[in-house]
Amino acid sequence: MIATKSICIAGAGSIGCFAGGVLAAAGRDVRLLARPRIIEQILSHGLRVTDIDGLDCRVAARQLRLSDTAELMQGVGAVLVTVKSADTAEIAGLIARHAPDDAVIVSLQNGVGNVAVLSERLPGRVVLGGMVPFNVMSLSDAHFHRATSGAVIVEHDAAGTAAALSVPNFAVRPTDDIIGVQWGKLLINLNNALNALSGLPLREQLAQRAWRVLIADQMMEALAVLKAAGIRPVSPTPVPARMTPALLRLPDALFALVLGRTMKIDASARSSMWEDLQDGRRTEIDYLQGVVVELAGRTGLRIPLTRHVVNLIRRAEQAGKGSPGLTAADIRES
Image (tube, rainbow, N blue to C red; front, side, top):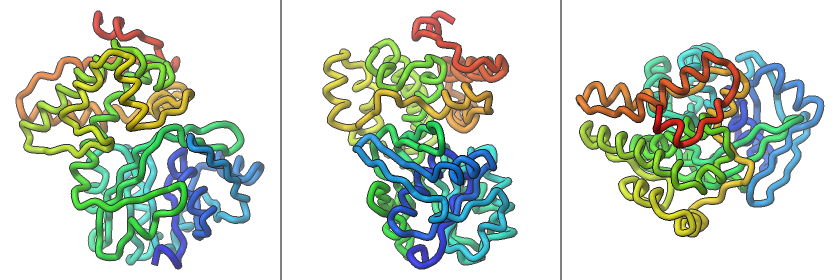
């Protein structure tokens, strides 16, 4: 069905526009449910998608169906959900009212709770979890750039949805352990907040051991919480989750050597949480560190660094001045 019917990207921001662009370039019938600002940019400039591996593709506006109203979902074969986690319940309501009952719903969102929200509000429908490992930057004039590497992971199903979605420049692989995969991605995403607080490009931040040790310490807190809760994360990188903190603590030169063999990062890449702070938007801190804090409360473990990072992000949100530009030492000392 995915190969023959339309695919609707529900909440086409950075990730959604990149996915929609490469799917459309591969000949799929793509619809983008997006904000008027993004629709206007695509109508004026077309949709341009580029990536760290040299992809540079332009999709004309006429190759897409664009709308800011959910009637766009009528008759589609699949809905790829790319809204922020806080908007999951709202988009589920729109899917329930407008998408066909047999449409496959795939969550390509950060966090670990979105599939449960979608499934609860869409009883009887096929809802699959997914994980997007890479970062996409929104540049000017409807230009979206994939700035890190990795293949999308989607929950295995009998219909072979992962394979049906996979196209050149957007590899999609199936998994039988989407919960573990999503927790593994959440561990990596704990750096989103630190990157947002630093204001540095990701590659520059990761080149500094002081920042990497902060990431590692956050991960150690989270790994202890997951172990107490009986959750086994599956790393989205070739390095197992339990070994990642040790890797992060390596000297700079050695870490750079290992990173270069496992992941590509564009020099300009930053986290989506940094973009949220810069644009005055609500971040997803409650769905990343906040989930770990909630789970720690149930397991009785103390995670002071993770709680502190949550508080720093909330202060930055309230200040509304973008990234506070903190150093790793600033975070340690405060």
